[in-house]
Length: 255
Image (cartoon, rainbow, N blue to C red; front, side, top):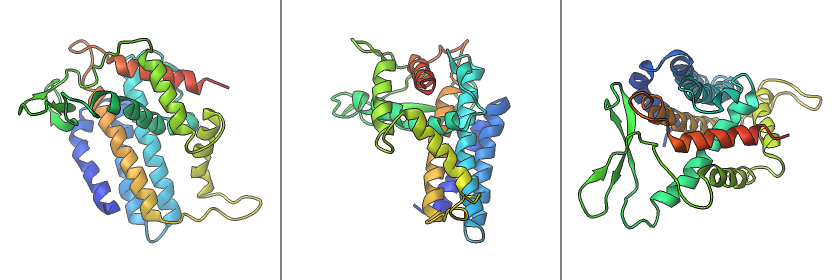
């Protein structure tokens, strides 16, 4: 899909984000604004365009973490919003959680079809929900809250998510998880600053860079829509999200 279309599709989240509060609202809206400006700079200044795209993902990650902290998810206060490696870790972690959950609930399943996302006002404000069709029945399940998943068995969700996270991250870089995060965080600075050997790095395919970041921002905004409106006192905190946060903190605190 054309990168300009990908960026324009983020407009659909604005109404929902306007009903968020504090840093959740403003960091998320700023992420979209960064991408709009990155699009304008694609041809005239690709390095600054890429830089803004990197900042967009960091701002979307900031918004998601601020959402978790605002609603009191256990241990979320240990995530440092000023640390680039923490913010850069959020997107790979979200993908790891989705990668862990999807095959366990929806793939090769005799009951459920793949879920769809829909906007709803069910929690009293604009939000996202999961609609999970039942195979061959013309009906669907609407979980309340949408991420209210409870896992049972010998391994906790936290343990299983952790293993998925490690395997996913090590596809990109051998070595410790935190080392990978530091490298990702430094990529942003290499776009603008010279080294001993050369001037700043060549961006390469700027459309591809922006498309990747626009997709990542979209995923993070979806996560906000599935979490921020669905909170106490009307709805309980999601146990799946709680386990994911604990595992994130555990991984990021390792030296």
